[in-house]
Length: 101
Ligand SMILES: [Zn+2]
Ligand SMILES: [Zn+2]
Image (cartoon, rainbow, N blue to C red):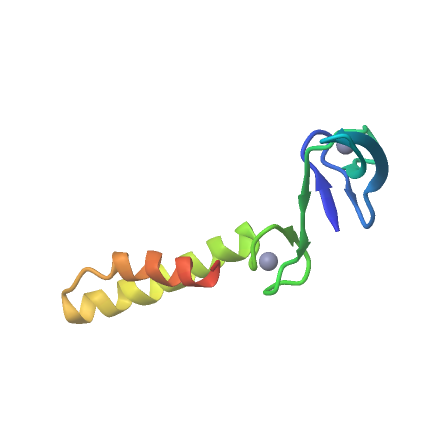
């Protein structure tokens, strides 16, 4: 699935255009992937978020889910910090980074 960065449309198949090129005297066919709506070649490959299965994302997990998780983890760590008197904010970022690797 692709998302056009120019017009924001999401589509299953990009428009493929064969562009004949001369490459060191050889004829080569380059396939260009274009937006079927506006013709832009600024496309991002996107897929369903592995967490909510609703939003489309270029990463494993969409931004909304990352934010949700960040809030949840921060809340958990804040409770934990209250009891243990340590700063765990670095751990939050570490966990979020791991999710999107
Ligand atoms: Zn477009
Ligand atoms: Zn999500």
